[in-house]
Image (cartoon, rainbow over all chains, first blue to last red):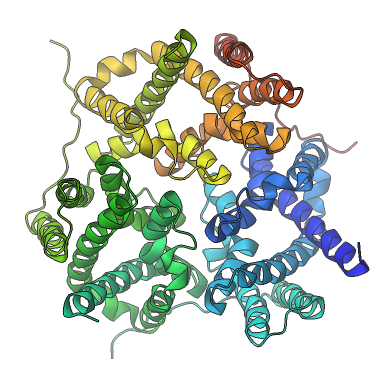
Length: 211
Length: 211
Length: 211
């Protein structure tokens, strides 16, 4: 296995684990039992990728054929079950890993989608869905409005769209390699962390009274 | 492109745009940011068709291969972002276009489903899902009970089922052409508008005390 | 049709009907109209199987090709519409049939999934999704937190996982027959009924104050 692939796999699994932790922690806050924790951990970690695979016809979805996609959410569930106050206090670390996961998920998924011959616009959409879809399903199952849609959230989908666009445009000009994917993933991750640091929000429609 | 196809495409795009406006407006009412507006606009416009395409195996779904399916929701988002009070005041116009969209979506989708060789009953279900599925996903993401299921909504799914049944029955007798689809679409649209005008509701189970 | 197949089909249809009744009853409690009742009855009855079929690529899903999968939810809707107080008072009977359905759904679905050559772990997940997925979609559409995730529910997913694991492990050792499936279905059903009888709950993470 070449070094770049080892790095990519490590980063993806880091993201899967961080996504799973965010699902398990939300389940604890919602007073779910261990089943609810395992379900939220799993859908957060693999939900976006499953939707992507269903839409591009890559069946069964890679989440079902790659054992780590299911084992890591279980590990995150067990860890959070026993040590949830400590995991909750590591909020910033989880956010950092989550940002890494967002970047790697979007960059690799946009490439995977573009490889099927779909249009760049659809590839960007599929890359973004892979990054943010799991969190949306998590929030719906937890009975709350998806955080990525709300005004009070920091930029999350916009970095995902920006980085996925970078990958899709490069792909449509014939450039698709690890360097571009890595740069896009790093850009998404950095953009997201800056948004958290400086409390950036997405534009909100304002009510302008008629004059 | 023959005239009938131009008319059909125009009506479908009218419906996509009306569905997208209803999603973007709901996002404004729920105080979502522009990301939430774009997500609700897109899922309302293409959600039903995507579910249908996944269930009949037409992968990638036409929403991903037809650029207008993604561009029109973006246009509706931008329009609503800047002029939402005006768009909101055009509620009746949006309802009219929404009814047109419902009719055209159901009629064409039932035909598309029946073409795959599926049973008439399944074709009706798929036609109805195409018409009402996007609105259900929109409402779930917005954190409210799907309006199509509630007592306080005007008839919406029942016109869809009635018109889709017309198409499926005609299809099973060997008749499938633009005239039938157009008549069914017009019947659905008219039925829906009459339901709005005369405040028709679907039957509701009543509690009868034991005698 | 051999006797075992008749028994299996009868049990599956019993489960479909019980699941559909639980959906229709929840719709009545949520004050939905007849459309809401039919939608909740149908998604509860066939939702889990549809998700499974989409994920293993069995398209169109068997729910669309088997007429009973759609007719039984309609029958449950009509029955509940006219006699819902009586149906609601039969809560225990519905729970019994629901437990039978859970057992048969999980056992047959795990086998169907394993037959596609997927890993045992993925087969267990797909078997469990088939058993509990419909109820999760039902609860989300009804605007409530999925009961299977909540602390106040009796064991439901855990019997499903346990029985599906039994089937998948036997399958991976080369044993797959009606006896094993029947035993697993009976085990799931019995486990679920005992959980209801003795109010068993899934483990819940506790807050341990730091010492």
